Length: 101
Image (cartoon, rainbow, N blue to C red; front, side, top):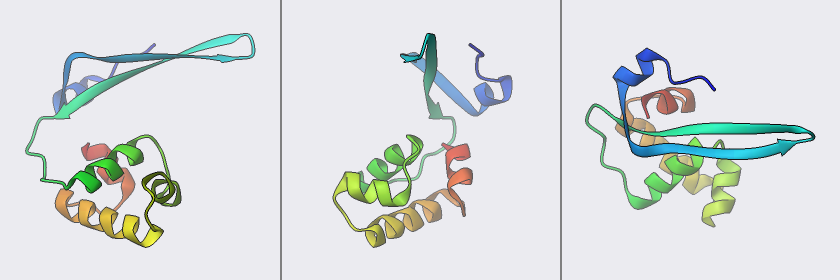
């Protein structure tokens, strides 16, 4: 598998034991997905517990509707939490947020 690009390494620090490997079978192919847990090198905005959970679900690729279902809240609540998260990180889109995280 490919390792994170050099530019990504300078933007974040890989922590010990941060490598996670998942194995999936797709027919006769075995797929191994490697994930690195990284921590931002700059200051991290203070998030509420609910906002941290929303960010965690967002990084797993869930849409707002699925996040609301997972958290047992309304779509409106999730959208408000996302707006607060975007404000705190100084971004306007999910893509920008994920790039900052």
